[in-house]
Length: 620
Image (cartoon, rainbow, N blue to C red; front, side, top):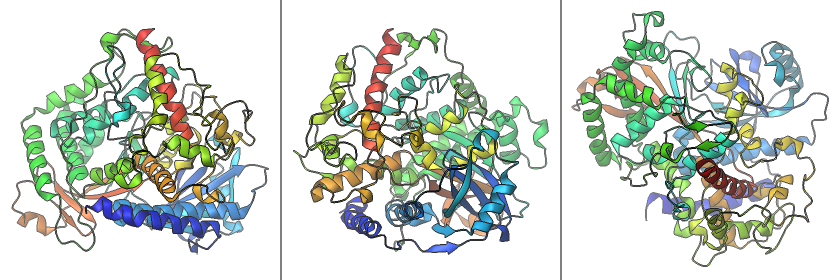
């Protein structure tokens, strides 16, 4: 029995106990009193739902809920339950699945009303003006490990953190549809067309998650260079907790990598484009090595994936050592926006000659125990035999039994969505698929709408960093909210619950979690299928935080026989870059909040609209 089978055996009883504890309003997460003002603290930013404050001397970030100014806070018991839910799912459930060392410390904390009032006063002048219609009033908050830092304040050493939102790294058979003579694309790449339609991006990226998760060194290099060239909201670089590179941050990549990986005696101001090729190979090498290195599970003395890791990384080292840096740099420039001639955003059309090729789902086995492998395993939970048996109803039919709006009990799949093309109709046939083949649709990268064309707002450093810890802002703007409404506006169902069948837009009028649905009318098998689907959805939207700090503190490195050493010391990696410079590396996973059951509806609606956008863009 492999690692995942063992975990699934433990998972359902664990989630069932968590849900029961929440249903009974048990004190599932001990509230720790917190005095922010006894620490060296810093405003990190905010999204729609939370403000994030960093405790710089304690390597923690505190996520505090916001409410509209002048409005009642509401039921404090519900606020506490929300915090408890986030804490126990991250620490107990995802701590088991990913590994507690990658989840870090997640705690529930409570602040006094005096602190909250003082914090609101002090933050008044630093918060963006368009965020000030909300304020902090809820005393319950969550505390998370600060994955963007290694060193406590104050420190003379700099930390460089790479945030990657890898997205869905596998391609379900149910989505491998041949659509005429158009390339067959994975969910993420299809979603690029929907983002273009909504003007949320100005150009499609050449990044494909299947490449990053492929275990093929050449394709992994291509994935990283694609992320650098067109980051969207899937790739960011932070220095000492401050955003320095990303979609809406135009700081020079040459200066960043030169200061980090070049000669430390030189200042960033003297670097120019000619310096980037000398550091880009080392950067790509360090990042790929960190994502591939197996981490030994507690209680084991050997790294199970070391053999495959050694094979892959030898190839990686050979490729990057023999590839002229200028060649890699030219690849980045070639992949950068603007889009190729012949594409238009306003008209939502893209010539077929500019579509490229189909996505490639051929893959080598990732080293067992590496962070990419751990996340991919969770994303693929729905295809595990234990998640259902042949003949089970689809996830949509399961949802109909518990829909908070309809409680449909067996009505057909929504008929209101236009089904005007053969490939959109084929998506509706997912209703007939067993649970093992249910697609894990891509959620929208909603946090990039902070800088959407509709708002015309530029993303600040602080707001960008906050997105790494504020998954509730991701929830509100998922791309299935097609009516242009934010979830907070859905206080009453916007649609007549009798007008549309389930699942459909009217289902979004009530946001519920499994522990909030009384007398869950599901069999144990159906309940487990629902749990695994929602867990997989969280893994598909998580962020990997890889933080580097140059170091000379570890003498073990010099005794390692490998030409370029890479090994764990305690919880951190030690990696030599291509220039034999040693880096201390810490890896964490953020955005692990549980998903509500209405995630299933969002996925269904988004899949339909995504495919229609692809057809419209290509055939208009």
